Length: 164
Ligand SMILES: [Zn+2]
Image 1: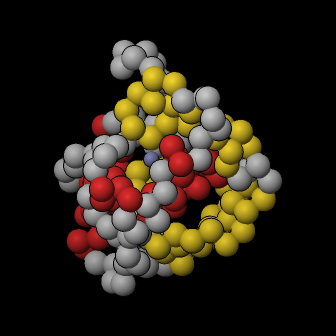
Image 2: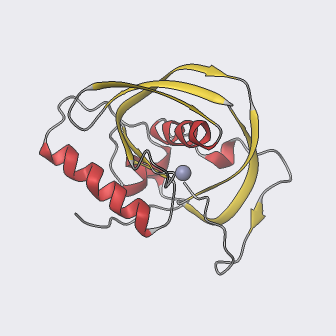
């Protein structure tokens, strides 16, 4: 496993659309492991392929609860419900936070790291994280969705850790 460099704001790869993964092999599994390791090293809750320069529909999420790191291949939102106003950041936008509107509940279909079809229903922070990461796969960034006037720059030593 290896920690990858997280691409930051201004890197044009963040604006590109990621491709579906066709074959889930050891290379993909290793990438997912690297993504989890990278996520943990940045204390983030979610990371998408383009953020480490890989234009593949891969997402990892970890809310540091009993579900452990969730690895998703080709995730697709099949249902969403309601709205929540949340404070959000992104590992690709260090020290920036803003309020945005996310769905309150999402249901996704994806493949796991063994190619098995899985379905996950999430609400609250999980719905927010899923929605944020799937946006990354389509080149959409949280700054595209901020409620005007709510963007904040926080100094690096304060304790905000909700970056995705
Ligand atoms: Zn992000």
